Structures are given as structure tokens and as C-alpha cells.
Amino acid sequence: MGLIPTRNAALPPWLPAIVAMFSAQFCSALSIGLIELIGPAGTAWLRLCMGALIFLAIARPPLRSVRRQDIVPLLGLGAASGGMIVFYMAAIDRIPLGTAVAIEFMGPLVVAAVRSHALRMVFWPVLALAGVVLLTEPWHGQVDLLGVGFAVLAGISWACYILLTQKVGDRFSGLSGLSMTVPVAAVVTSFVGIPQAAGQISWGVLAAAFGLALMAPVLLFALEMYAIRRMTATAFGTLMALEPAFGLLLGLAVLHQVPSALQVTGIVLVVLAAAGAQRGGTRTSRPEPVAVPLD
Image 1 (cartoon, rainbow, N blue to C red):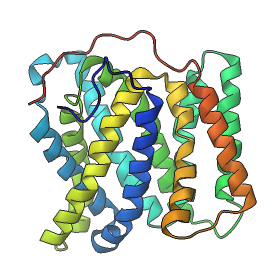
Image 2: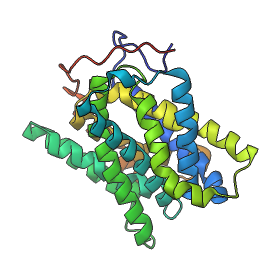
Image 3: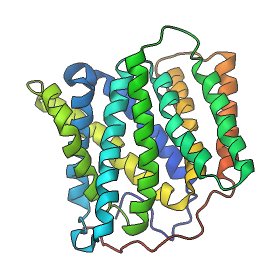
Image 4: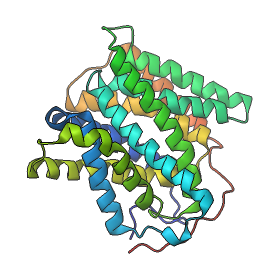
């Protein structure tokens, strides 16, 4: 049995996306301790390595089904996946998690705005942006420009990830596409991850990286692959506006950080934007993916 529902399952595409967002933010919060030991790039690299091993163990890479025109999207998705995690880990090492998510979210927000084919759909990204601003209150505190830069690069990677995941997901079924792209991500991040983690790897570090990898990239990418294949880029991109809200709520539940009235208002706005973008956001036609049975 795969980690994601079958195509015929009556599961709304927004539900796996929301679970994926929670998994991503919970994993990010738990990654702080590992970042302190082996650095942000080392943490991202080890998580991707463990994720690659898991995907290769549960899914057969359909290498014989890969066409020449599939190579660039597969390599591109692997590189975008690696960049998204490395840059985000580097960002949360320097700026608050909620702020990093808000800045990173600009990537999906641009995707939602640019790819919208209806003028009325532009309203939802704008509403989401207003909610993100209220949610993160960026006017408080000093700005770490390097941390902000890392978050911007993570957002660019995230935008590329959304578009390429749709393309790869339309070609390969189940986890077969991820069994090819996550190993690419691990290789790409090794150039910065190995130097940072060298000499700091222990059995405890490996166990922690394995546990984190189960949440992200394994559960995260599997659920997002399911959701993105069934939603428009506009709907998915705007739905991601909920991610800063998850960061704030986890801060309240785990770290006892009480949100202000403006932040509560921001949560309401992003929820409304996500709900509005989801209406009519299901993809009605897409190519049949290659049917590859999972081992």
C-alpha cells in the first residue's frame, strides 16, 4: 500500500495539502535542535538522504518509462526540492519560523496570481497576502537581511516545486516520481550539506534525521504530490497561505506563544483566502500518469 490515496479515493485534494503543511511546520520546529548540531545545510541533506532511502525502499523508480522530455522536469524538481529545504533551513536558523514561512509563501503566491485565468481569482492571493502581513507583523524587530534572502530563495524554489510537481505527477503515478526526484535532491544538497555535517554525524543524529525525514520529505512530498495533481496551481498556491497560520498555532500549542489580535485577524483572512481559492480549484483534465506498481 502506498503512502497516498488511490486515484479513485473520494478524498478532497485540500485535505492532504493541509496535513502536509502541518507536517512541514511540525518537522521544521523539531529540526531546530538538529540544525544546532550539524547546521541547516547538513540537516537538509541528511533528511533528504533518509527520505531518498525510504522512497527507494517502498517504490520502484520507473527508469524504463522515462522519456527524453521527462529528464529536465525530473532533474528540475529534484533541484527545486533540495533548494526549498536547504534555503528554508538556513532561513529559520536566522529569523523566526513564522516570518520565514511568510516570506517563503510569496513563491506560491506569485504562482497563484500569475497562473490565474480569471480576474476574480486575483482577489484571493491579495487577501492572503494581507493576512500573512498581519499574521507575521514584519514591522516588529530587526531585519536579518541574510535570513530574509534565504527565505526568498526558498520561496522561488517552492514556486518551481509546485509547477514541476504538477508536470511530474501527470507523468508518473503514486510515489514513482518521488523515488527519482528525492535522490536527485539529496545529491544536489550534498555539495553544501556534507561539508557542514562532516565530523558531526553520530547514530543519534542519523536516528533523528530518519524520524524527521518521515515527516518531511516523505509524508510531505507524498501528500503534496497527491494534492497538486488534483488542484490548479492557483488553488494550491493560495491554499499554502495557511502555512504561516500553522506556524503560529504550533507556537501557541507547543511554545505557549500567545498571538495578538492582529495575528488572529491574519489567520481569519488566510483561511478565507484559502477557502475562496479552493472553490473551482480542482483540475478536471490531466494526462494519465504511467502506472507503476509499488513494491
